[in-house]
Image 1: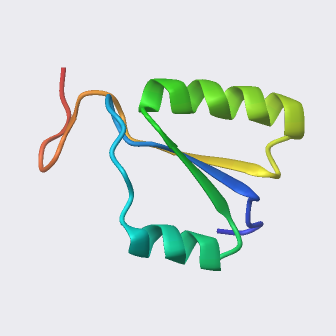
Image 2: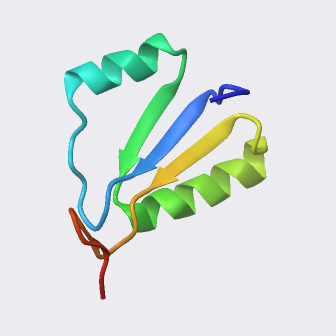
Length: 75
C-alpha cells in the first residue's frame, strides 16, 4: 500500500473478531497501527478520522455486513 497510512481501520463484519498475532505483527512491521471494529463502527470511525486528519494518514478495509465466506455478500 502506497503511500502507507499511519492507521488502518479494519471492519470485520457485524461482530468484532480478533486478528491473529501474526497478522498484527505483520501490519506493525509495515509501520502501521490497526484498529479492529465491526464494519458499521469502522466506517464511522474512518469517516470521522479522515475528516479530522485527512485521507493521507488513514485507510480502511471493510468487510460488508452480510458477507458469507464462499458466497459473498448476501441479504
